[in-house]
Image (cartoon, rainbow, N blue to C red; front, top):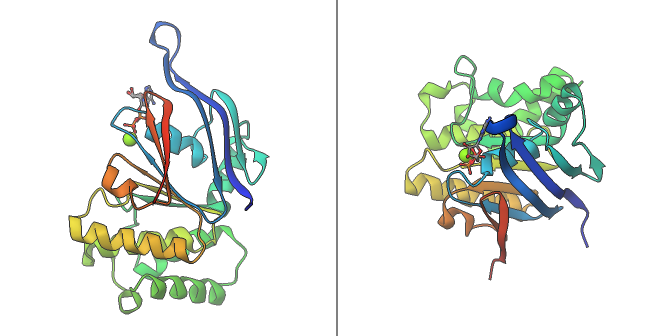
Length: 229
Ligand SMILES: Nc1ncnc2c1ncn2[C@@H]1O[C@H](COP(=O)(O)OP(=O)(O)O)[C@@H](O)[C@H]1O
Ligand SMILES: [Mg+2]
């Protein structure tokens, strides 16, 4: 059996205090192993973003353990969490989140500024990933000169440049037309075929169906887990 990359053990999340206290995650237990492609699917308000924020080390659970490569990060300080984000995780968002003033090459290079990699190696690594997502001829373009699908390819290259243990994708096709969205999902499936560990969050059952396994959540609980045929 492959190593567990992510282990969630009895995760609860509350927002607010007193009368305004809201119980949003009500005991989530889940596991993602190295090389898996897992989708978390649920309707609006089910707690997906709350869970993603915890998985992405942007927030902490109120109760429970979050094991990342076997290490419980649920009580880490903000500084240690941001170090984990920069070094061990890759993020892809619905809205691409590229830096408009920077070229494709510079956007992809950004996460490597946190490493001690020399400039020549940073550039070589960035170019390699830009080639891998099919944007070799667009190195010096800025985001405004690219289509939405191309922007998402840049975001995917940027997310992978640090060799993250996990790629976290939050509604990665949410701002794309159907055809472009299908191309991005095909790229994500290729990454999985190459051995990447991927966790995708979506409200769209059609998108979730692309994953190897889907975890359906509702009202802060896991409703079912389904393996792809
Ligand atoms: N920062 C917050 N403070 C208080 N309530 C929040 C906060 N973020 C989300 N919620 C509430 O938590 C519930 C789940 O929200 P969310 O995790 O965004 O769900 P989803 O992403 O599945 O739509 C909703 O009822 C939402 O209003
Ligand atoms: Mg959400």
